[in-house]
Image 1 (cartoon, each protein chain N blue to C red):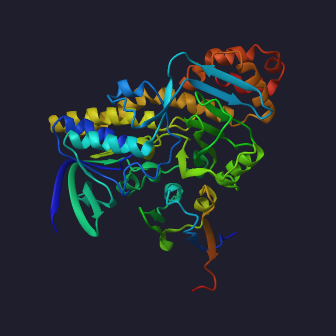
Image 2 (cartoon, one colour; image 1 turned 60 degrees about the vertical axis):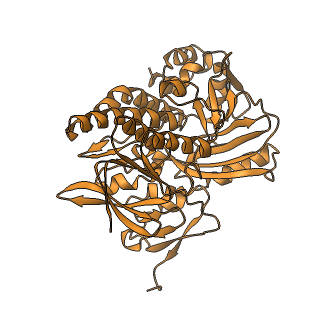
Image 3 (cartoon, chains in turn brown, purple; image 1 turned 120 degrees about the horizontal axis):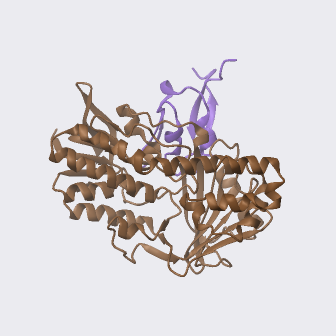
Length: 396
Length: 68
């Protein structure tokens, strides 16, 4: 059996994995990126919406081959049908085609010198002298020992590699959302904005989304608490039925869990790093993980390159420190906001969305929401309701 | 009260191999490959978390009593 040696081996070619493979390979180090899927990017577990700023921020070409549609804002719907809308003059986000996007990210990594293996499954870590020396990888029926100075777990929500290596990434069931989504023909929704429906009967603890990919084609999905006795599919099919939308024109079905309840504390253990969904690095308000994966990959790459250049793997620990310093406070704040929104009744949602109709919603998603909270607190429907008042004051 | 012991079984026709069950399993008793779902009985602690979390209801349990 041949033994393979790399500076860095990365498990998982979603967003975080290829981004890190690209950056580390670009610095001149040998990288192997593996993914168990036969086609990188498919199947996806994603609604495919992302902020427009990530392309420039992370040096990703704005390639129309993976941009389905440019988006100018969002509209939210309360249980009784109140709406609040946020609309920009310029493009604020895009709906991607992940099966092309992820593949291109892996291609950029390959172009910088990384080796990329699809249909290669990391089955276990190689542990010697109390540390992780590499990975056992099954590829086309052959079990290979791949040795590496740095091992990166970017294996998504399953997060099995980090756990097998001894990093505790476990989270209890109420910290996950169950997601279910159709890409389908759908008409009657403004295709220039995304649409989000809230309500305890609509989507317990989560929301229903319509993310347009075309004038009359969209990702229509749902996220609910994963410890709910009913399934995400049940709630989405119910919503579609109630809106008179046929489920006979479906192009794709996507399923997955989303870690939304907190972040892995220990992101590095010796020479093993954990990034992206595997580290639960997901925005807890909207459940989006792509931008956070990019951010984590950028920080992890920077310290991996430094550690390899200076031949000092202790520097890898700086990834944990920098992520928690740079991203931690914002993410913890969003988590707190999420925990408050979980307590809202349908009536609360109606009242809040009604009031929000006249405020600057942009700050809500970005974590700079104190002005919105203050605006809500001034409203009589909040001011004279002790419970709403105390819920909102928790956030100030 | 002792927990009922069971085997977790997958309905292949419903399962999308999304790996969510493997993600919520506290003991790594489920492994999801690109084309295969695998349950490791010895590791299962009968918590039922995977069954509830599955977005499409593809998992069920079969009591172990009388099977062995």
